[in-house]
Length: 272
Image (cartoon, helix red, strand yellow):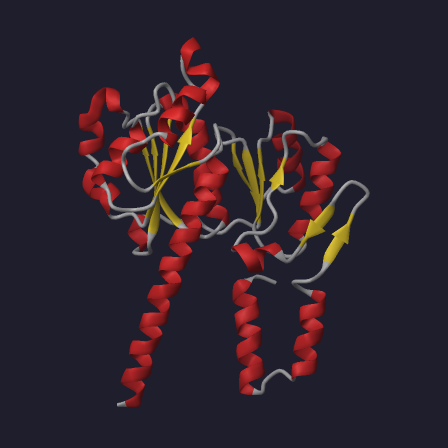
């Protein structure tokens, strides 16, 4: 059961289509259900709280553990995202879920995936900016979070400060986004520049890209934390997942507010 299913159930109770007792039984079986495996306790309620089910971090799990967890979550029919997957684990998931969505660059796999949406959908969207080609893996992880959460997104890659004209050439598109994930390694300057140009929430991600004095992304992390541009929130090094989750949460809030206004307008029209 996801957020839409719960809303529909409550509306059916309100209309008298579903008796309250039946609804209570559905709720008991649905959002509060928990699966106990030998190695994991699976949270089936998270999609109602966060608009995304429990995400499976694959890097430190065995292939068998990963498959066992994904199989249980997939039974609910909601999107299930696994991150930080090596080639062997992605191959195992491909074999088990041939209809799933694999992203080798982002090291992710989604089961029960929604269709991706872009800015052309007309919905509020997340812009994902990556400074250089070396940062694209983190950008792809962020993009897959948007897919799993049903949020429209646009990828704008290779717009780092070494060639600022590349960013300025895409500025009109960037300014239309409701939230931005901005990814950079080296000195980590791109989020500060973007935040100075765009009045939207910026979720910055430092990457571990750079020569020795970048200290595996620590230099970019500190630069972003010390940004003088307002509105820059910083995720951990290479953590495209957390930044995208935060950006998608902003977009969902924007969509909820928009839908509420449209519903009020429609109700006013119906009352005339």
